[in-house]
Image (cartoon, rainbow, N blue to C red; front, side, top):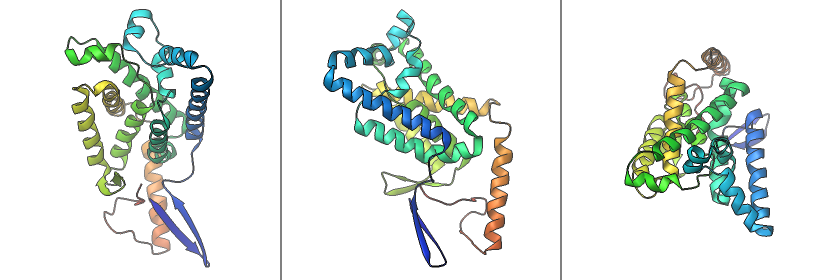
Length: 255
């Protein structure tokens, strides 16, 4: 959400969680670069573009049937259209900036790839289940960074549970409930015909939860979080700034 501040008569205006952090610059840059290459190939060499999609998108049947294990990584950098990449990159920015500030760049990238690859692995495993709705999943091509983005969403909800998120840019919902709603929708959708990509979304949520709850949390992240909380509250007290609401919600910016 927009926010403004002023000092000595000068005003500034900003939107969202702040400027791109180090990891996000590279991740968004690579995703956008690959998307542009996809677009050029799609216009100039459509046959090659389609073959690249089959080769680098995630198809469970070729992962376990032909050993195309690289697809567990490469599928994260392909997107199906402008809106697809726009919403993924917007979510990556909105939820990723503050997490990278807390975790540091190295751990943030580790979490991003563990959840993205883990979501792909779970998608392949689900495709092996002997159910009718999993049959379509085996030979579907899954692309997009959504598995990793859903993992970041869950982490954001765990670190900032009461931070409001505007669902559909209209309804303010605390982050913890927003994550529950998105998880429930992904689970419900994964049981139907539209569940191809949603199985990967749900996988990202599950992998992120297990990763964060299994002792893999960054050993310095909590210390850094507490230090930043103390420092910001100290500045607020110094300048008599009170945000209202819960006393332990140290940063009430709304995204």
